[in-house]
Amino acid sequence: MISGRVIVRMNDLPNIAGRIEDRVQDALNLAVLATIEVADPLTRRDTGALVGNKTIENDGERAAVFWNQEYAAFQEYGTYKMSGTHYASNGAEAGAQALIAALRGMI
Image 1 (cartoon, rainbow, N blue to C red):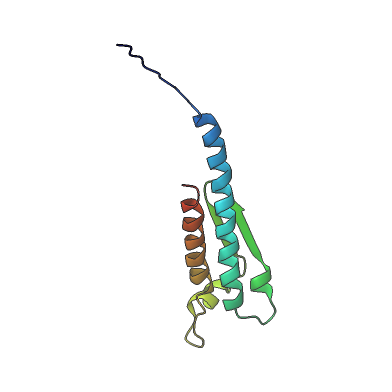
Image 2 (image 1 turned 90 degrees about the vertical axis):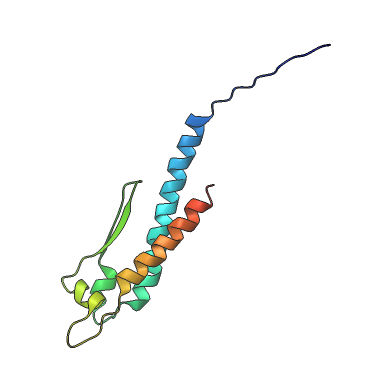
């Protein structure tokens, strides 16, 4: 009787880790784009200052979109004179769904 055993050891974790970081960055970028894609059409335009004045932060681990106008919260939530458009919260929800879908695609 002849018997044998073959053991193959493969440590590809450094290569995989590098690809994961790139893919997470791509997923965050997609989430930001989805957020803006949904938020911009919901934003009321008088002068266009709110739509045109955003700051995007993405450090590879988290991403955020900031609308840089003093009245951004009034547009989002409304006042006693006008209803809110909920542009940021709807945009954030779309961004979250895009992030989840992109991360699922990594698996």
